[in-house]
Image (cartoon, rainbow, N blue to C red):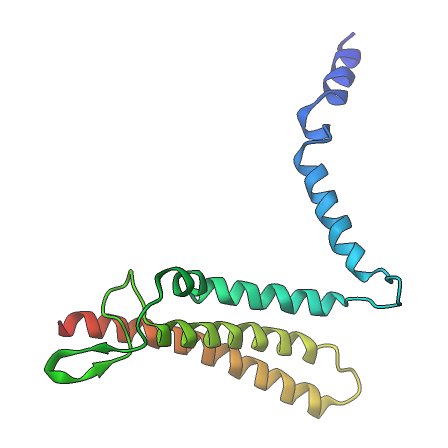
Length: 161
């Protein structure tokens, strides 16, 4: 009797329904897999291209692209003593220059990680693999250090006001 009830509960559990999470993930997986199939004219979209499109979209969002579109921020701001500053002193706001630099630094980090990954796929040319790995690590460190420096600049600009 106990095993019969547990089988009934397992059969009708909400995780196994068609509207559950597993159904949504399988739909998304089928949608993404459909890009790799050949179209009427023999055209396919590679998974690498889809991955880079997602990376560019994430970089745009993380860099403040939506904020730039909706709020239309200034490129530079008048600073103290008649100087111009390109870093907004408040942490909750940014200039267009900050946004572009942030996007470039984020993309640099993604490109560095990807290049480091690709260096592991080079099997026969050790020199090329080492150069790709070093360049990937350098791009990742430049992106991280640049992002940290941008935050330091914002703090310094806020303390000067």
